[in-house]
Length: 256
Length: 310
Image (tube, rainbow over all chains, first blue to last red; front, side, top):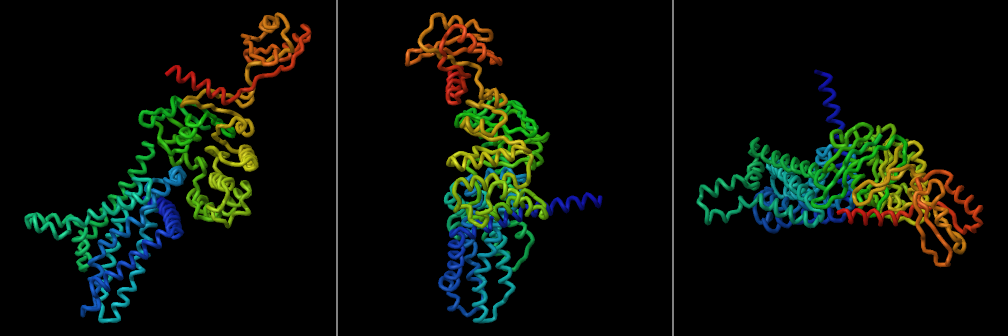
């Protein structure tokens, strides 16, 4: 029994190492392309504009990051597909996907590697927004609890959007097309949260529909209500799309 | 042993490969020859596990390429068409990445990388971004990554396409050296390429395997061309009676000489018999040689046959 466990453990380690190598390659590729910098800069810039200008942080008399996190779902929808658009599309366009697919790796090793690489880029982009709470904390007594909850929610929601973006990139060869597809799909997840449903749908129905929106889930997480249901929601959306991605890779072997 | 049994591949309505079977013993250098679009690349994509064939099966050293894909892939190195290597990486970074992904033990990595760098003459470009290299060098980087885990089988798709003559000679030299200990399958549409590097040629035309012979007999046609000065009477009849000649064909000759193609079963000594006959008959032979296969001609003929049959 114990030997079997040890063996499984080392097997897992072996596959994880391969995924990390793929992730490292992914980060390296993103950093050598101006697109990654451009979108990270746009993301951070938009976060600053939203927080200080749109939500008028200085006009309020509360040191809180609510203004930033209120816009975070939209910001993530914008940046996540941009971080994943080139991942599969570019490999296929350059033909290097053929080499990847003939390496002795499982499709899931590749997908996990690509996901981890993209996640590291998102983490990087979020770290650059950390200047905002640092500035905010100088103007009042910032409660750091909600800030951490907000960042946790952003990472969870971002992970789900990255997984969706990866699937979009795996479906098309043109990365710009993957970007638009990603924006549309990720944007759809916020549709149930829109206020306009109330104006023509029965109230009970609009409420129920809202439950499908990513925005309501995100709200719950950043309010610090660490409900395992919401965490599980984002985790399972992420897992589902990574699984779809694996299925696409398998399918490509059969249907050239 | 590499084995392909009845491989077929269809892309929608298009049949790329039809019932292709062959066996390649360990250590052989095999050329897949055929016109563009004949099915060479498809065959390689199946052997490397990139594609699951529509029908038939293939195995690499006993591992079925579909059922035991990963085990089979550990034994092979692959250079896809046009060497798609990561252009943003330095040559050494790329080789390190591939060694890692191929699970070369960390302790062996340095040694393996120096070995392939030496084999492919990449020492001077190690610290250059791959995107800045010439096509010839990129191709060599592609071959180096295919060898970094010291596989027993190398599959190279058009390793010399788009290279200049000096680069071609370089790459052939690399392949010849590898062929001394490894099984190599390469594809090309140039006959001289096969002659220069391969032990055996597999000819694929319109998705079917046509010629599977050792290089020596492939190069040597079975027909003999005889060209005699002037037009000696009765030459055709006498040549037709030489032992081993199955049929005779008159070929046009612009200078008014007589020329014949003698078809035979390819037996040895036929040239000598014809030369002796010419001497006894008092003819002046101005050409007496085995006909060499002209690949383009064979491709055309086979394709025409296929189309006529369809």
